[in-house]
Length: 159
Image (cartoon, rainbow, N blue to C red):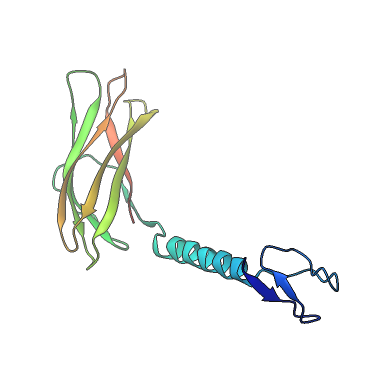
Protein backbone atom coordinates (compact mmCIF):
# COMPACT_ATOMS: atom_id res chain seq x y z
CA UNK A 1 0.00 0.00 0.00
CA UNK A 2 1.40 3.40 -1.00
CA UNK A 3 1.76 5.98 1.76
CA UNK A 4 1.99 9.79 1.84
CA UNK A 5 2.60 12.30 4.63
CA UNK A 6 -0.12 14.65 5.90
CA UNK A 7 0.97 18.25 5.23
CA UNK A 8 -0.76 19.42 8.41
CA UNK A 9 0.59 17.04 11.05
CA UNK A 10 3.19 14.96 9.16
CA UNK A 11 1.52 11.63 9.94
CA UNK A 12 1.96 8.79 7.47
CA UNK A 13 -1.37 8.20 5.72
CA UNK A 14 -2.59 5.82 3.04
CA UNK A 15 -2.49 7.40 -0.41
CA UNK A 16 -6.15 6.42 -0.94
CA UNK A 17 -7.36 8.18 2.25
CA UNK A 18 -9.41 11.37 1.90
CA UNK A 19 -8.72 12.67 5.44
CA UNK A 20 -5.82 12.26 7.86
CA UNK A 21 -6.83 9.80 10.62
CA UNK A 22 -4.62 11.66 13.14
CA UNK A 23 -5.64 15.33 12.66
CA UNK A 24 -8.76 15.06 10.46
CA UNK A 25 -7.30 17.39 7.78
CA UNK A 26 -8.73 16.84 4.29
CA UNK A 27 -5.97 15.47 2.05
CA UNK A 28 -5.35 16.99 -1.37
CA UNK A 29 -4.59 14.53 -4.10
CA UNK A 30 -2.30 16.73 -6.21
CA UNK A 31 -1.55 14.01 -8.75
CA UNK A 32 -5.19 13.93 -9.83
CA UNK A 33 -5.25 17.73 -10.02
CA UNK A 34 -2.13 17.75 -12.18
CA UNK A 35 -3.60 15.12 -14.50
CA UNK A 36 -6.88 17.06 -14.80
CA UNK A 37 -4.95 20.28 -15.39
CA UNK A 38 -2.90 18.71 -18.18
CA UNK A 39 -6.03 17.28 -19.80
CA UNK A 40 -7.77 20.68 -19.67
CA UNK A 41 -4.67 22.36 -21.13
CA UNK A 42 -4.57 19.87 -24.00
CA UNK A 43 -8.28 20.37 -24.69
CA UNK A 44 -7.79 24.14 -24.71
CA UNK A 45 -4.86 23.88 -27.12
CA UNK A 46 -6.86 21.54 -29.34
CA UNK A 47 -9.72 24.03 -29.50
CA UNK A 48 -7.31 26.88 -30.21
CA UNK A 49 -5.53 25.09 -33.06
CA UNK A 50 -8.64 23.58 -34.62
CA UNK A 51 -10.55 26.86 -34.81
CA UNK A 52 -12.79 27.12 -37.83
CA UNK A 53 -11.40 29.28 -40.63
CA UNK A 54 -14.13 30.69 -42.84
CA UNK A 55 -14.02 32.72 -46.01
CA UNK A 56 -17.27 34.48 -46.81
CA UNK A 57 -17.51 36.09 -50.24
CA UNK A 58 -20.55 37.36 -52.08
CA UNK A 59 -21.23 35.79 -55.45
CA UNK A 60 -24.75 36.10 -56.78
CA UNK A 61 -24.03 34.48 -60.10
CA UNK A 62 -23.62 31.03 -61.53
CA UNK A 63 -21.51 32.02 -64.51
CA UNK A 64 -18.50 30.00 -65.51
CA UNK A 65 -14.94 31.15 -64.68
CA UNK A 66 -16.00 33.91 -62.31
CA UNK A 67 -13.04 34.80 -60.12
CA UNK A 68 -13.86 35.85 -56.57
CA UNK A 69 -11.27 37.58 -54.40
CA UNK A 70 -10.23 35.68 -51.28
CA UNK A 71 -10.76 37.46 -47.98
CA UNK A 72 -8.65 35.00 -46.03
CA UNK A 73 -7.47 31.52 -46.86
CA UNK A 74 -9.24 30.42 -50.04
CA UNK A 75 -10.16 31.73 -53.49
CA UNK A 76 -13.23 30.54 -55.39
CA UNK A 77 -11.59 30.46 -58.82
CA UNK A 78 -14.57 29.27 -60.85
CA UNK A 79 -18.14 28.07 -60.47
CA UNK A 80 -20.74 26.83 -62.90
CA UNK A 81 -24.28 25.69 -62.06
CA UNK A 82 -25.96 22.81 -63.92
CA UNK A 83 -29.38 21.24 -63.47
CA UNK A 84 -29.37 17.46 -63.30
CA UNK A 85 -31.96 15.01 -64.64
CA UNK A 86 -33.31 14.24 -61.15
CA UNK A 87 -34.56 17.77 -60.47
CA UNK A 88 -31.64 19.04 -58.41
CA UNK A 89 -28.53 20.86 -59.40
CA UNK A 90 -24.81 20.82 -58.97
CA UNK A 91 -22.25 23.57 -58.92
CA UNK A 92 -18.77 22.67 -60.02
CA UNK A 93 -15.58 24.63 -60.19
CA UNK A 94 -12.21 25.18 -58.60
CA UNK A 95 -11.04 26.50 -55.23
CA UNK A 96 -7.47 27.58 -54.45
CA UNK A 97 -5.87 27.10 -51.00
CA UNK A 98 -3.80 30.29 -50.61
CA UNK A 99 -1.92 29.12 -47.52
CA UNK A 100 1.07 26.95 -46.68
CA UNK A 101 -1.24 24.83 -44.49
CA UNK A 102 -2.90 21.54 -45.39
CA UNK A 103 -6.49 21.61 -44.10
CA UNK A 104 -7.73 18.27 -42.78
CA UNK A 105 -11.27 19.25 -43.84
CA UNK A 106 -12.69 21.93 -46.15
CA UNK A 107 -16.25 22.59 -47.31
CA UNK A 108 -17.88 24.86 -49.88
CA UNK A 109 -21.54 25.90 -49.55
CA UNK A 110 -23.97 27.52 -52.00
CA UNK A 111 -27.60 28.57 -51.51
CA UNK A 112 -29.91 27.50 -54.35
CA UNK A 113 -33.00 29.47 -55.46
CA UNK A 114 -36.01 29.10 -57.74
CA UNK A 115 -36.97 31.64 -60.44
CA UNK A 116 -38.97 33.70 -57.90
CA UNK A 117 -35.98 34.06 -55.56
CA UNK A 118 -37.20 31.56 -52.96
CA UNK A 119 -34.39 29.58 -51.36
CA UNK A 120 -34.83 25.89 -52.10
CA UNK A 121 -31.89 24.59 -50.10
CA UNK A 122 -28.13 24.36 -50.21
CA UNK A 123 -25.51 22.69 -52.33
CA UNK A 124 -22.46 21.42 -50.47
CA UNK A 125 -19.19 19.62 -51.22
CA UNK A 126 -16.28 18.83 -48.95
CA UNK A 127 -12.76 17.48 -49.11
CA UNK A 128 -10.30 15.91 -46.70
CA UNK A 129 -6.62 16.91 -46.71
CA UNK A 130 -6.89 20.04 -48.86
CA UNK A 131 -3.21 20.44 -49.68
CA UNK A 132 -1.20 23.60 -48.96
CA UNK A 133 -1.23 25.94 -51.99
CA UNK A 134 -3.30 23.33 -53.82
CA UNK A 135 -6.43 23.49 -55.94
CA UNK A 136 -9.63 21.54 -55.41
CA UNK A 137 -12.09 20.67 -58.18
CA UNK A 138 -15.36 20.57 -56.26
CA UNK A 139 -18.85 19.44 -57.28
CA UNK A 140 -21.50 20.66 -54.81
CA UNK A 141 -24.89 18.93 -55.08
CA UNK A 142 -28.23 20.48 -54.17
CA UNK A 143 -31.23 18.17 -54.01
CA UNK A 144 -34.69 19.65 -54.44
CA UNK A 145 -37.98 18.77 -56.11
CA UNK A 146 -38.20 22.20 -57.77
CA UNK A 147 -36.27 23.60 -60.71
CA UNK A 148 -33.23 25.57 -59.61
CA UNK A 149 -32.83 28.95 -61.33
CA UNK A 150 -29.67 30.27 -59.69
CA UNK A 151 -27.13 29.66 -56.98
CA UNK A 152 -25.32 31.97 -54.60
CA UNK A 153 -21.91 31.30 -53.08
CA UNK A 154 -22.08 31.32 -49.25
CA UNK A 155 -18.73 30.25 -47.79
CA UNK A 156 -15.66 28.10 -47.78
CA UNK A 157 -14.69 26.71 -44.40
CA UNK A 158 -11.62 24.77 -43.43
CA UNK A 159 -9.78 23.46 -40.41
